[in-house]
Image 1 (cartoon, rainbow, N blue to C red):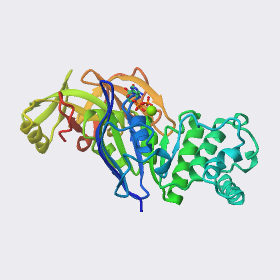
Image 2: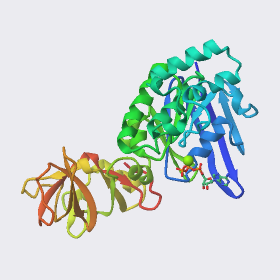
Image 3: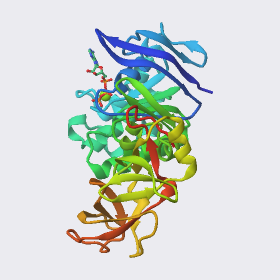
Image 4: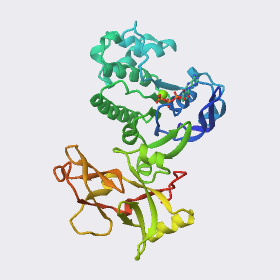
Length: 364
Ligand SMILES: Nc1ncnc2c1ncn2[C@@H]1O[C@H](COP(=O)(O)OP(=O)(O)OP(=O)(O)O)[C@@H](O)[C@H]1O
Ligand SMILES: [Mg+2]
């Protein structure tokens, strides 16, 4: 059983707090993804776990034992880097076996393990080549193999797929996930790509400016983002955020977006905004919750021109205007055309997110 615990882990570079008091508990066999924009502290946090970067404060524990004073090579973790970090003068076979050789394993055992890992990663045909004679994908496999062969307690990945083209990346992320699941090795994976985070993670840690924003399963983070940053960072296309005023409209409360666009707001939600003492909110809408409506002026619909249409094959994204702001609607291909005027769209009123207009925190 492996349990990795971070308590108040902090990193300061001069006057910059690159990582601010991170608490995280990674359980046995879990695949945790650290995601966030460039410079948010992902690599720094991972490097502190690996022991490659000193921590400025806090504790990192593996199975109840503090790692703070443990050298990187004694942490029983293997790291895979974006730039592969292969030894250029060694063959694939020598690269794979290097860490075992350093541990003075007998040559025949090294040979067996290299062969097993090469088989697992389909690297057998390349064992005698040097890294420069491999494609990017093959190099990344060797880098992966070097981590696998050590059979560590924890895998640490720092954007391992960033140098690969889009198609290869999708294939490799599946493969990494399958291997990891088969081996059951606890893993922490860094990426700035939210799709990678969504598709690979058991749990996602969203970071911004060195601070944890939210920790949760991909589903939790997608369905209930804690603030407008997470809401717009996770999801493709990003969630649209539109400012609105809460006003009453005879029958009940409405979200008034301006330009004559209004959507009903349910009583429970009105109560939440009242408790927060605000009458303005940022309304979050995902594209799948805006769709084409019939012609009837039902509650929950609005009329807009079609600004742009992006075809994705199975469905299309239409850019339309709600209260003067552009939002994405998911529609059937061919159902709307660019430049069309006065089409009616419907909003799934149960799926509306509301955020505080100043703090960005989720209200409902
Ligand atoms: N050795 C260093 N000295 C000073 N500042 C550093 C050092 N390493 C990183 N930083 C700063 O710490 C912050 C976090 O950097 P880090 O490399 O962890 O970001 P990241 O999330 O991995 O970004 P990216 O997605 O671009 O790889 C940045 O502001 C960076 O400039
Ligand atoms: Mg980085």
